[in-house]
Length: 400
Image (cartoon, rainbow, N blue to C red; front, top):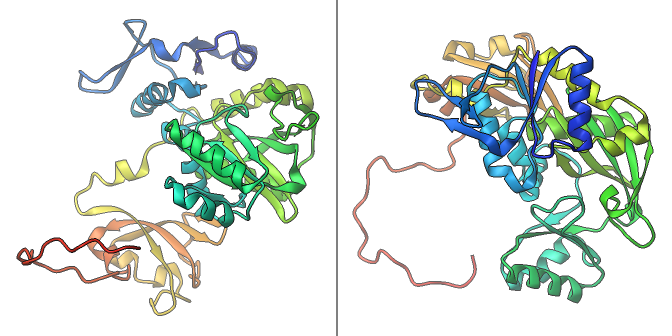
């Protein structure tokens, strides 16, 4: 395979290890500076230029996009995707994981355990937000901080309010998060590649420092993760849209709590701690998948007029509960079931004999009109535009 590694840090340990692992396996590999690309949208098909010249053909691309070049870097990755070049981490996946608020919002939909989190902007709402996550002490996080930068432990309500107000005053967006006392000073990083955790380490902070990042002076040790932790790590990475990721988890009293999903995890610490060839595992996975580039399913399927993708909830009274998929009438309505979600389980391309249960969610492709009839209407919309009322604007009223 011909592999491109996108990286601005050409001499960084992770970049060099990935390059070496690819060369040792007989692949052709180039490390390309992310900012030296030009996106060519002038022709009939999407194309890329590198250092002013048309880019040669590649089978796969591995993005190592730094936080400082997220926008341009993900634009380059997205262009590779449009050119049908395989990447284990899509542009959307990188964007999802880079914004802590967006990542938390997405994971919260899928029953992933996380520390209680709140996000507010109005000064008057700060005390209420702190109480929502369990009260002080709380952790205050910048939305786009990395390597432990922008993560502050506020011991009291007044200190937390002062920190948040100060950061808001500099136009910074912050998350307010519950401080998990039992995990103070330590966390677990699982390195996900494809459908499995290939290596894991526990990080411990030094002294009174509560941040366990290696860049903060933390120490690392190899750890054998329980199956529960491995499953959560893989699910979190996949939900983000990543096939290569570092998933950071706290060891809570009730199980794993996902803190962050990193789309460009460093390899030096985890390879040193585990003595495992993590870079090689990443390259092997990319080589196996290079012929199957990820596609934006909604983008590709929605080009058919009148057709699209929708999620249908199976509820009592819908007539679907207890029915096998083949007898549910969906296929007769020109609706194909792509995946069945049951709790935390996902059944791709479910068999026609699968019996539907109350609470199932079906990701379907089919006629919009037919799928709309299966989704309960929230409200009846008027079929015509009404005349403007005599008093088009009501007086403001307090509250919401």
